[in-house]
Length: 445
Image (tube, rainbow, N blue to C red; front, side, top):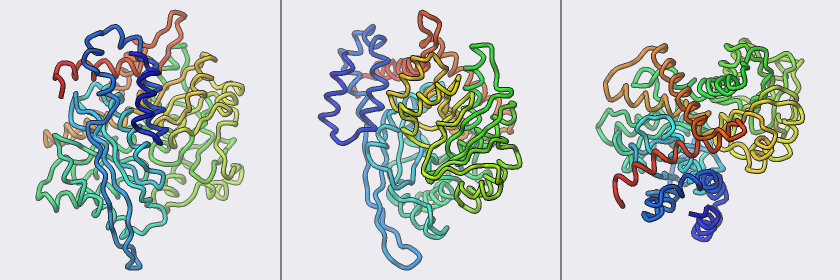
């Protein structure tokens, strides 16, 4: 297999899907050598079968707004690969959602889920609907309309969606309620549910906590830890909030937070009290991060910018894809950043990744460092199947163990002759081999 040839073929077959092609290119370039050690993979055309989703579901979603006007959005579900378990992956509600973005996310999800060691395949879904600025009633009506089609394609042993950008506990609850009404079944069909109806403790915190647990493991490889380290965090949603919370618990000093309008820099650090303010602002009031600077005058708000040009020890992008470009990466390295751990999915462009790796700083892709969210989703599925609820301590212990295992596998497959750990290669090879072997065992299906 030559990665470049496969990518060119996919470009021809799927024109106009840059994010999907970017994700495939990044993975194939790192697994090519390992793939070619297995001639049986090539004979079975495994790489093409692995890159192309099993199924792409696309549908119209019509709903009525508060003024009585009928609105129309697009709905999608990409069921990428179920070789190792039921399809599993989030639902994203954001105006940027399209097939290319969801195909890249589903592709990445396949390897991320494989890394968790839990039996979950890869999928992703969503809509170009944005909850921002909508009333609770409008969000409910949209979620119900979306589920009116999606319910035909999902099930506890078929496909188990979760939340993602724009889909939190409120949206999951509305979708779960509609699924239950349509099917007459109370099943563990969505993860990220409320505590009252099958949700798992630690699930809201899981992606952020897992991100920091992985970061902690990376630092340990160099005899270092988080105590006293300054950290740049992007985003102000679920992942960013709980990344900041865990950073504080481990003695670090978060300096930034952002949303799609800009970022705040707080030289005094974001402490527990300030984090509680951010959580209230974003989760309850659904306000904008610029209001932080009005509440805490020592902080500076930078409109329309990203936080990567500030000076700090560590960066952890927790917002969205492609938010760190080459220029930003060079600035981070020049400013002395020693580690970058991704809380978001593919937030770093390929040229920026090369900057980090050439500088030999610790850098981990999201498929490994942000796998904590889907890991606890898998644990929620287990609890639902057993009709049990585990304690906060039990779930956190299992999450910590899973992140340690993922790090161990990344080190196993990513350590270079000079001792540098290429976490991108390590994560991709470890995730790929499990899926590939399962596909081979199951025949051409």
